[in-house]
Length: 100
Image (tube, one colour):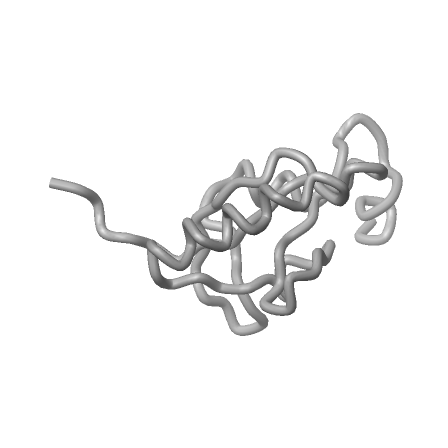
């Protein structure tokens, strides 16, 4: 029996900077997960993923991630995606320096 569909967000890496980015409802890429499009339909998720994969001049490695509805937008349900959105972990810079 297939698992029920859970809400998704499309993520990828920005082609030039390598930053983690998320697809918005306006077909733009944002570095803030809270601004990402929350997709609650499986067919729509697959269509949006195809749209994202066609944007090879902007992003690389687009894929769907499981999220939950949060107060301020989508929130990752897996630690890997929570970790990814904070940036590289070898030293404090970029997003990590802003939090510290």
